[in-house]
Amino acid sequence: MADTITDILSRAATIVIKLGTAQLTDERGLSEDRIRAFAASMVSAMRRGKRIILVTSGAVAAGSAVIFDGKKPDTIPKKQAAASVGQITLMHRYFEAFAALGVRIGQILLSEYVLRDRVSYLNARNTIHELLNNGIIPVINENDTIATEELKFGDNDYLGAVVACLAEADIYVILTDTDGLYRNYDDAQKRELIGVVERIDAAIKKEVSGKTSKFSTGGMASKMRAMELTMHSGITGVIANGADTNVLGRIASGEHVGTVFLPGGAASQRKRWILGNVNLKTKGTITVDAGAAKALVENDKSLLPGGIVSVSGKFSLGDAVNVADASKRVIARGIVNYSSAEIQKIKGKRSGDIREVLGEAPYEEVIHRDNLVVDQL
Image (tube, rainbow, N blue to C red; front, top):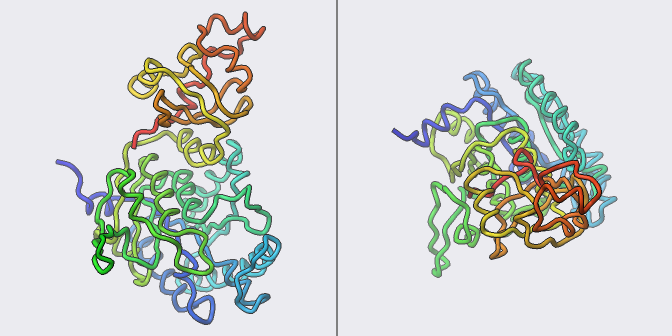
């Protein structure tokens, strides 16, 4: 018998929860009452055997209340300054709320360019697991004080999904100010909550709407992007309303709340890294013929030069690229063993001919299957 939603949720051992700025603030700024209530909900789940990781927003909003009279910063230096001031306030509020319940927290600031490096990614993973093993809740935020737009995850929804992959979580919960993902109709007054999503396709993506808070950096579109990553990685996703500060407790106990996104299959830790980080910065596209596409998608094979039809973009050894079929549909993503210029020369040729063409042949594969993630959703 297939697992029910209740089975999946109640069985989860490790839960990543993302709290947005709207869930942590009121008209006066950071809300100590809401932070304490969320902390109590997380500690309650911990005492039922759950391992909790918190990904939090709110630093920029907290800092803006101090140095910009509550106005949203309009330049990167101002955002970084607000984050610098606000991060201290935010962590102090969390420290007090959890300490009152006898639980310790550990702060981790992450940046996209750091996690793009495989060694740094594993170091962050080990730190998170060590904190969890010692009963400490990791509280994670993006390092906004040094990140630029080019080196950001984009929003904390996606950061939370990356953390869920990194920590090998069972569930990733995004709390927002709606009950979940709604299906909209021509009649503006008619909406229907979508209880379960098994596949994020074009029809689902049409249902998304914009952001709702002046300090938020993402709306439902960013949440769909995050859920797409978790589903690819074998992690169950949930989008639910954070107005109820005990919603995490309800989810952890197996209650079907909001919209649940079911995973499409498990992925190895290395492939989760590729999906979550390398996939964020693809540098080009390799188009393959029908035979190569079938070998990659159906037979879990490496990409060899013989099946390559064309190359677009400029990239180097170790960069991430998309792999597309003849219809230009992206079927996989991976890390290349050769540059775009080299692939242009060896495309369509046998692996045994690489040395003759390039003068050396360090790899038989253009992308090894261990460094390739097939788009299964």
